[in-house]
Length: 195
Image (cartoon, rainbow, N blue to C red; front, side, top):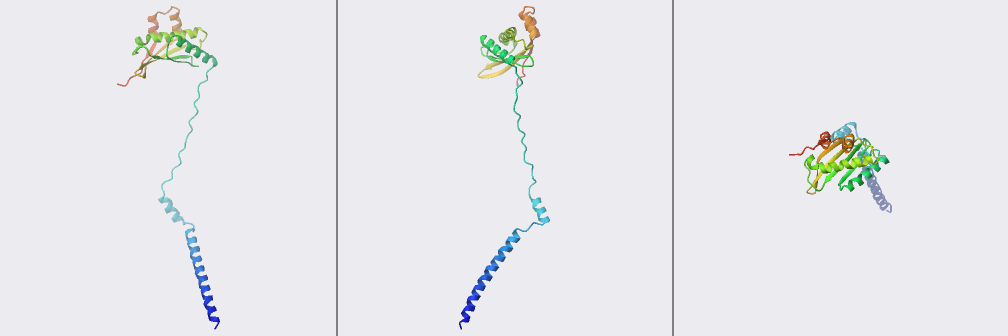
């Protein structure tokens, strides 16, 4: 009589163990199904459904800007030209480059400039600056270019560019070339304006 309750307890324990074993086997089966390797057809169909891969954008670094080599002599000459501009109350900037160009950017503040006749007083002062610096020992340029800017209503407009050969300016200052002859030899260009 004592054996039957034991058998019942064993049945419960065995039933619980079987239930646990069944749960573990179902869990292992699901894990195996989920983690099974894909077949070649499944890989191909999945790849076809994906958008076409694009290469990541390539970025080319912007090169570090470099300035042309400027000798100490040119820097001293530019400084002297700046002082000469200041003495004549010329507003602007000057650059003397290694390619033998004296470039003076002049901003007309006192009067409006539309053509060479309007700009002539300031251009002559610019030529005087180039000649004075040359005669003080900065004979490192053979051309002079003056970019004339007109400041109107807080806006600066590039009006014209006047270019001269240093030989012509030296002859003009020495009196070997008249004002009219110098004017005839100047190269004057005006930027095109939008209508």
